[in-house]
Length: 242
Image (cartoon, rainbow, N blue to C red; front, side, top):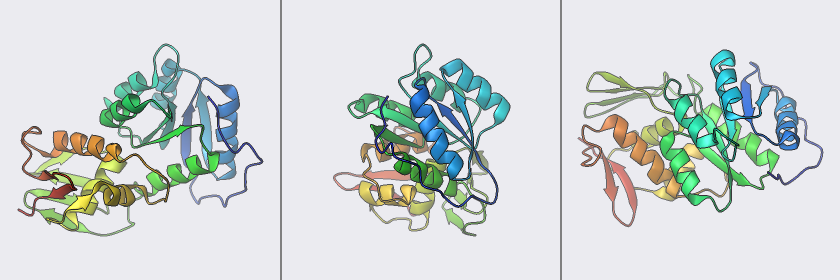
């Protein structure tokens, strides 16, 4: 795996509370590079070099976010994502090859929050990590959004559907909250990308389709015949104002 921008990492201001990042990559040079940038940014970092080690560290260390290379030997990144999502909503940022479109879609549908394509800028990766973590911070807003039988508690990052709690990833929650603030409004994919990323990087619009597919599994009675999260063909999506 290659990374762009191999110069000396800039010094960032440390966060108040050190957040833990798990880097999963079988290329020691890249793992060390990402670690150096994150540590200068005030993060605690651990490194796993394969899938089984990643699962073990995630179980023991409870990281705040996982940076996961999909091209791992043996147990690959998609298998790791699938296993993590069975019992955890920890944010996952995938590292993918530029031409691996299918893997991007599958990874997002499995529950990854974001992806960065290789070769990548370490500064971009750090910014994306910060953006995903910001979406998980409680108390940023105090909205309690109610749309029909759907309740979105932004402060607590909780979603209640007909009295039942739904577990969403950070990106799924940000997407749903953005639409719940303006029920009935039609959002383009580009607008929804802006809502969930919060950083001005080139993104992959099909990522929104993957997040919507996951959301429908969690908030619709029948995901194949959605009544809440509706497609507006040729434009984007809207949350039904019911």
